Amino acid sequence: MRKLIVLSFVLSLASAQDWPHYGNDPGGSRYSPLDQINRSNVGRLHTAWTYHTGDVSDGVKYPSRSAFEATPLVVDGVMYVTTPFSRLIALDPETGKELWAFDPHLNKDRSYNLFINRGAAYWSSGKEKRLFLGTLDGRLFAIDAATGRPAPGFGDNGWLDLRRGWADDFPGAGYGLTSPVVVYKNLVITGALVRDGEPQGPSGDIRALDARTGKLVWRFHVVPHKGEAGNETWEGESWKNRGGTNAWSMMSLDAERGMVFVPLTSPAYDYWGGDRKGQNLFSDAVVALDAATGKRLWHFQTIHHDLWDWDLPAQPNLVTVWRGGKQIPAVAQVTKTGFVFVLDRLTGKPLFDVEERPVPASKVPGEQSWPTQPFPVKPPPFARQTFAFDELTDVTPESRAECLKLAEGAVTGPMFRPIGLEWTVMFPSNNGGANWGGASFDPASGLLFVNAMDVGSIFRAVPRPEGSLIPYRLQSRSVGSSHFWDSKRLPCVKPPWGTLTAVDLSRGEFRWRSTLGVVDELVERGAPPTGAPNLGGSMVTGGGLVFIGATNDSRFRAFDKETGKELWVTRLPASGHATPMTFLGKKTGKQFVVIAAGGGNKYNSTYSDALVAFGLR
Image: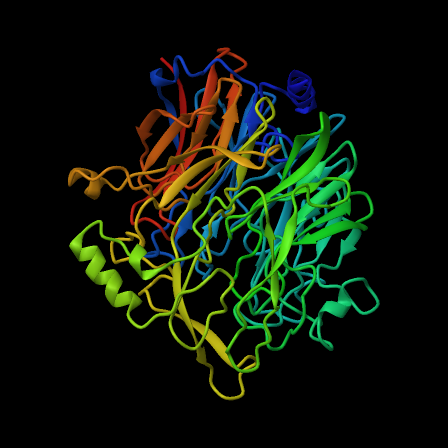
């Protein structure tokens, strides 16, 4: 019966040879049936070509640093990749030769959190073939796939200002797209990146646009308005103009059922909610919408009244699990907290029990934290969720001394302990756990592969000036970072610091767990692999391999999907904080594996603009 799942899954892909969506299929599996590269020959992989985008920033010339987090598409023999500066480039996928490039002319002198763009989305209807490109400054372009020019029938000569009607009352606030949109039939469905550092801001509502004209078709209120279900979870009128609660990451689509699955984030301000008492729907919830109308079908909230910025950062994986000999369509949502919530795709009901457990109350004046939080009984957490001082690092005397100083006088506790007026060590950090890299799913084995970093944060709440919109802000103890690590970015907890875990979604159990990443300085001292902080995702193939970069050690690896054994590793020009993809060349008939190696981000001092393709010798 498992073979039937795989066959059905493969047939649902637009083309088994291409990679037409960010996650290959609309449901975000990051699975490819290609098996030319497999366990027996992966050791023969070598660099086939490298393309340099030219778009890189270390924060010297421009005020923001770059993060090359894109996953390319390959459709009909053409590769499409986006750059940190929101450019869209078409390449010959077998040689890396540039075919055309489109530049939206992003204002690079403006300050952003990071220069980021994770990819474009492809749409076709008859002879029309377009790519939809979102930009950091809130524009959406429809680009002709053949020429690289804006399609004149869409919006204002090929583009729309998405800020209009959404951010009018907050002209100085950021609003943009960092992740690819969803395409359903002739609709383009999009979320946005909005600010979460102030309580009010541009709307994070989800919208659908006509793919030909750009006209608005529907809008879903992520913070329910008066009279809508869920509005009662916001005290008084705290729902009005509420910032955050947006979908900055990737959404998933069940095209057959016409359902779109939205991972929503924490409400603003994300570390103090005294002005938004209540459960705060639909923040931190997986929301299933009717893709044609925007009607909410169901929701499942993973955190009530978030005070930790543990938003849902990853694309929901649309999977199939087995129960009582029957196949159940499901959604697997990985989280910053290290939980995997496995939900019935049609109803949102958890397929493993979820318990509402009491958690510590906030001691910050004016705050009213939610008394319980949801804990799935299965699968077990894939990331560290607590910290005790006997777990402080001892990898080197220097690191231990530095971390002891950082932790001096700090309090620790169970997960969901609110950050107080004293220094508080929080696990996982506000980056996870899992992050936007998410997970990959193998339909043959029913395994979900998720990488995590076991790094904490150390914060405290400090008063803001009198008259501020909110009375407290968060202060980090680590210079230039919110992470609980030393000046060399070595985490202040005992290893492992990075893991790759295979989760059997039908049983709710781990199949295996492997250490992910190394620290070269420690290896040179004779230490065993420690794992490494990581940001980016994995893919799994019919060749029995899980490919992943992600780690801040400038490596790209392949693991045996059944055992977790590392079978291949190579160095990249910089760390590959991206999710890889694979395709079969139409001219050569050869399988290629591709990853963006941009380094930088907030994890490295080495920056690059390299897109690297690998093939067999």
